[in-house]
Amino acid sequence: NTKTIGIVVGSLRKESFNKKVAHFLTTVAPQNLTFQTIEIGDLPLYNQDFDEEGSPESYIRLRKEIKALDAILFVTPEYNRSVPGVLKNALDAASRPYGQNAWQGKPAAVVSVSIGNISGFGANHHLRQSLAYLDMPTMPQPEMYLGDIANNLDEQGNFKDPKTIEFLTSFMDAFANWINKF
Ligand code: FNR
Image (cartoon, rainbow, N blue to C red; front, side, top):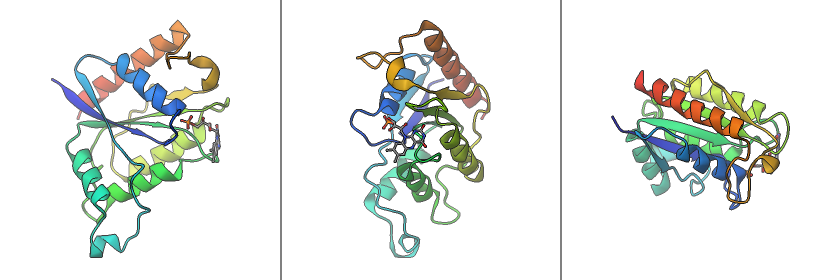
């Protein structure tokens, strides 16, 4: 039973470590998972007037894409100990108009990635707070905090340490099992 997972990355940067990690995760995932990258960089800042006056095309596209997915994998950096604005904006954009939350019921997993040693803990957990409100069953364990990322990836964006690769593989196996519960 094939499942389609939307990948939402909280960084727009061309050389983003988060983008590299997101790609690496797709390479260690079980065969029955297929992946689709969800674009969030083209979304104007959410304005509640949109809900009465009409939403931007990019919002309509985003909501439609999310509704068609089986699950969502969030891979995010931490900005100032929280979720980057671009990611929070995407959560808000697809959560409305009121009563039409596109995220509702979609199983999710969270990966945080940082160049530092706290490994995006703040972003990881602030994101989980929003996902709970959005009614997204979010995999509690294993957690995935990837720190010191600049030293852990090689030139091709692959993880160097076999133990880390093993852990990332088991994380994706656990996520596949998690999705099957819903
Ligand atoms: C950061 N960075 C950062 N790192 C961290 O661990 N905790 C933090 O609170 C912050 N805060 C922060 C704010 C802003 C505005 C920027 C631009 C950066 C550093 C961050 O981990 C680093 O830039 C990563 O490389 C971002 O991920 P991408 O873009 O490589 O995927």
